Image (cartoon, rainbow, N blue to C red; front, side, top):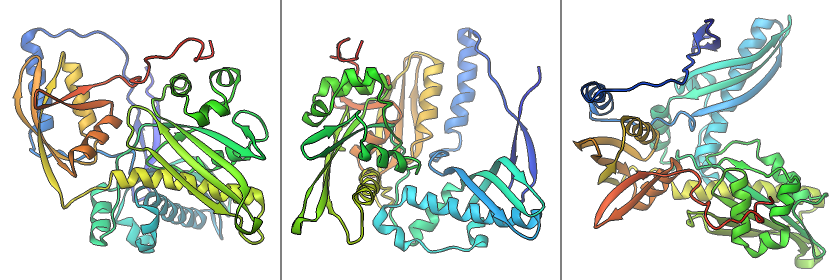
Length: 408
C-alpha cells in the first residue's frame, strides 16, 4: 500500500516528507493478562514522569497565513514571505489568547526574536515565479515559551478552547426583524468576522428551509428554548447564542445600534452581554454594522478568555474518582486530560478494572476546572461529598425536542 506524504518544514526551512499514518478499523481482543500488560505501558507513559503538561496544539497553532511577496528574486521573495507570515502568525496568536484591552502591552518583536517562539511551520499551495512567491503557511508556536513571555510581561491570557458555538443573527430595523430573510446586513457582517479564529469557534447556520421551519426571529429573541435547542441539535452543537442587533435613533438623532447577546446551553456561565454604539462622523450605516459585528465577536471571545485566564498564582489539587469500563475509555480520558490547559499534572493514586482515582493538580478554582473539562466532553460533579469525573456525550442537550421543532 502506498502511504501518502505531507510536505512540511522545520525551522531551518528544510522540506521534509513525512508519512501520514492511516489507521484502519479492526477488532482486537485482550486476554486479562495482556490487557493489564498493555495497561501498564499506558500508565507508565502517562504518569511515569510525574508531570504532564497540557497539550494545547490547537491553541498554539495558526492556520491559513496567506503570503504573496514580490522581490528581486524568487529566493528573496520566499525569505521575505516566510518572515512576514511568521510575524502575522505571532500577532494572530496574541489576539487569540490575550484579552483585547491588554494587546497594547504585547511588544512588537523582530523576526529573530519571534524565531525563539516558533516550533515549526508547514507550507501548502506553494507557487513561485522568478520574482514572486505565494503560499499558505501554518505555524506552531512553543507553548512553554509563549507562557514564559506573557508571564514575564504580567499579561494575563487564556488557552482553553471552547466547544463550537452556533450564532443566530437577528437584525431589527424600523420594527422589522430578520433572521433568514435577505437583506440581513447583520448576518453578512458577522460572517465576515468569523474568518478570524479565536478560542471560541463560531459558526452561522446555513438558513435553508429546515432552519426556517425550526425557528424564526421572534422566537429567537423571545428565547424559545426548545426551538433554540432544536437548531443547535441540527448542527450538532449544544451551545447557541442569539445575537440581536437593533437599529434606532440615538442621541441627537444619530443612528445607533444596540446589540444584545444571550447564550443558551448546558453551561449558563456565558450568560448575557449587551452594548450600544452610535454612528461616527462620516460613517455609513453599513460601516456601523460592520464595526458592531467586530465588537460583538471580540466581546464574546473576551468573555470566554476572562472566564478561563490561567491563574499561575493559584495552585490547586483535587482528588477525583473516574469510573471506567474499558482500556479504550481510559486512553480517551487520558488523551482529553492531557489537552486541558489549566491542568499542570496528574497523579495516579489507585487503579482497578472499574475505577481510577487520580489527583489533578491545576491552576485556578473548581469552577474554572469544571468549565475546561466540559469543553472536552467531561463532567465533574460531587457524589456523596466526593468528586467524580465522567465522559459525557457531545449531545447533552437532546432532551425535549420534538420532530416538529426539528423541522421534520
